[in-house]
Length: 116
Image 1 (cartoon, rainbow, N blue to C red):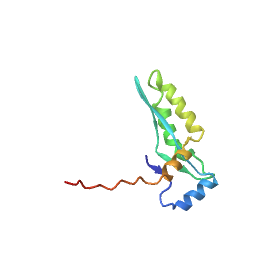
Image 2: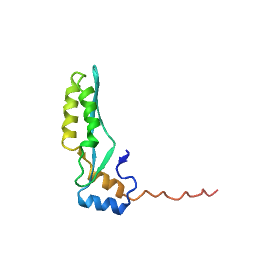
Image 3: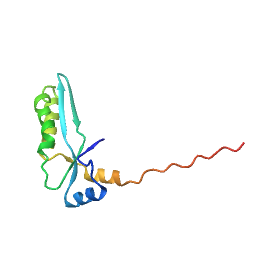
Image 4: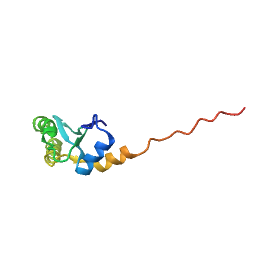
């Protein structure tokens, strides 16, 4: 999954922002087509300390308000869940993202030649 908002940042800058209260979040949106409803998540967004999430979540909130309600019965349910998540500032995934990007890259075992 793509992370928005960290382009051009060094590891030290990212760690500094995280220590100041920066976080990784996703936003949700719901789409309905008559009898089918879907709840999806956005890309991951890096939110700096003190930065508002409104400008990042507004598009997903509008999609939900316009297109999420129409499917019965899950359209209204998914829409409410998505709106609640977005109005709370998104779903915080900071621990999971930091753990994933802190893992060392896996090393492969060297290929051994067969002896004939």
